[in-house]
Length: 70
Image 1 (tube, rainbow, N blue to C red):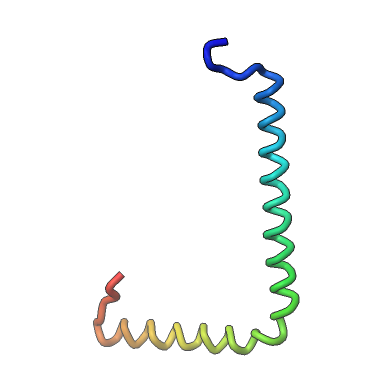
Image 2: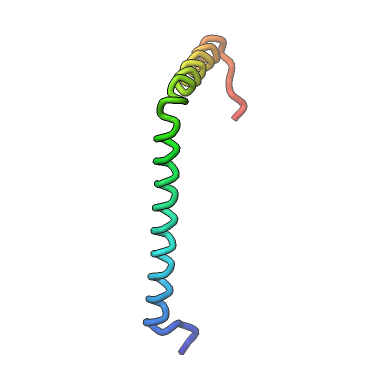
């Protein structure tokens, strides 16, 4: 058989892998949706404050000529 799997076995393994990947994607999307639903009102202001802070730090570093270490 030259080390290759028969076509039927390879196809079945491929389908199982695709189904596992599909379930993983479904679970990840559901968790992200649930987090977005739960935090849309509670973290909206916090995320806005973090974005404003990031812009202030960026402009400060731009004006003072500092470079990031990354």
